Amino acid sequence: MAKELIKINLGLVMPIAEIDNCKPEHWAEVKSIIISALNDVDGYEFETKIVSESNSVGLIHKRIVQGLYNSDIVICDVSCKNPNVMFELGMRLAFDKPTIIVKDDKTNYSFDTGVIEHIDYPRDLRFSKIVDFKNTLLTKVIGTYLDSVKDADHSPFLKSFGDFKSVTIESTEVSASSLILEMLDDIQTDIIDLKSQINSKNSSTVTKIRYNDQIEIRNLFNQYVHENSSEVINFEDALQYIIDKSNNNLSEADIKELTLKLI
Image (cartoon, rainbow, N blue to C red; front, side):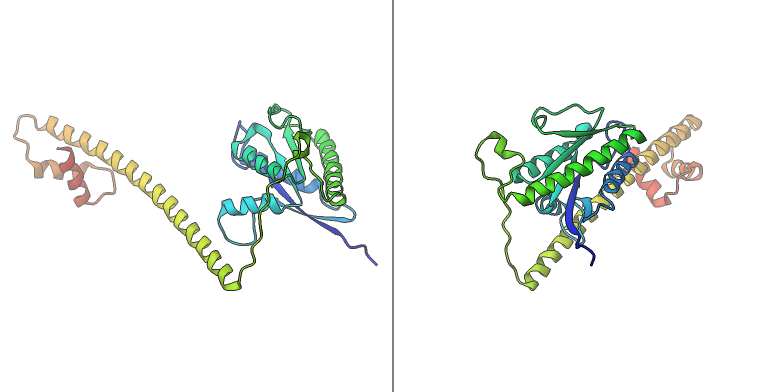
């Protein structure tokens, strides 16, 4: 009979966007290295994901806090000292739950967390060093997990500074209808945020286009005045000149509107 696997929910806190010349592809590869280090471990099955990831839809900040609190172990990559990563690390340490910190060899230790053991890996992800890193990481993860389940009062961080009570998140039992309504509120909030982002992008694009068009129309108007300097300027003739000469895709009404604003 096959031995039942111990399932461990492992959360990742790490950069995902470009920082300090490390592009998103670099962080994707680091994530892949961490996940592969925990694959095919005898007796264990790891579910590894970024703490903000979830199977359900909801507010991303809420998912981050829940992921930080509910994960059996969190691996935090403080390479490049990404502000969001450092903040999330602080939250996890406040929960006083098992945490493993890793960093690349180009990142210095931070004053506040330097007392905690860090596992280093090469920023260039050199193969031989990465093999050593993966072996060390696996050993630390298993050891940290076993320590946490053996001791109900396990305190990986706060006990080093005195007798403190860790932060807890209370669970509240709610009805199915209340839960659905809460999820719908979260979805609505996400949609509103998304619409706001889209409108912001569209607004900036329109502003850029209008500015470029104004520059072109002003130049064409000045060109018309220069070519007809000996005559009285007729607005309708100038407008037609601009329409004929312009290279934009604006309608005649838009060109007239912009021209009136410039004259």
